[in-house]
Image (spheres, protein in one colour):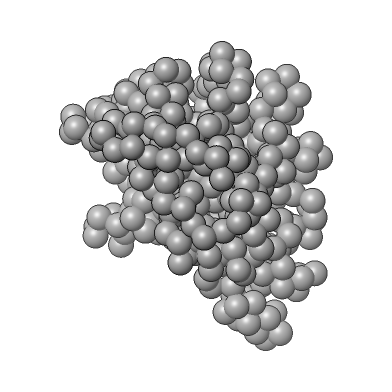
Length: 357
Ligand code: 1DF
Ligand code: MN
């Protein structure tokens, strides 16, 4: 194994293998314009979603973490590259941070999604060997979203689509959103289903206990969203659709045996109008249509479990900069007891394959 030594911000020397590239695939970014709109809308009390008020009320506040975060998230240049260098991250796939434009009124959401994509392209073009981009969309207007997916893929060179879970309490299994799936499938470009705070319909018990954020609420929301996409039959209609999900699958791999069992029970009993027969078991879609990233979960037992149950070829590295980025975490994953080939697949090959880099 060949190594390069890096002295990081904390003065620790870390050693990184140079036998493979480390590509981080869930890396947040936002144009300053979007944060300005968030600030104005929050101050005016225009957005009723409690999750948005909790999340961005905090990150646009005056605490040390909030100021550091909002400074880092709008930057896709030297500072970000320095943080990547110090941690041994070679490449970031940048995506519009949660909840993107999905919280805004449809007309401004469309405009800002297009603007964000144009701005992101400038950063990607400035550092083509360090950054890739995902296309931001306004699912509020599914036809416009489909058109923007095509523009992002064909004209901007982006490698997939970012959707930050629910859009104002609506989920993508609703057929009105399916033009989005149709566009992504026909271009063979993946959708990254990123977390959002729980939808307004389910957030109360989370927010009153302070558990609405990345600690658990994100996973409850996003795991539910992914499961709804599976059980509604999206993948029977779009068998080649690829969805990438963070946080090691938002707990679904751990649940999948019981989900299969209980889904079959529900189909048989005809207990629910919404639960219809599928061509395959829910777990089969997890192993055919879904790719899994380690954002926020650089924890060896969980990583090993997910690799074991869904297959090593669909589990890949993500760093979650600038929310949960720790240089030591990257080094810890680098030190896992896998062969060089396995590490190359995890840090580089799986991402190259699913995002077609
Ligand atoms: C947080 C975490 C925020 C993640 C995020 O976007 C985010 C956080 C607003 O810790 O507040 O993407 N994350 O993916 O874990
Ligand atoms: Mn994230």
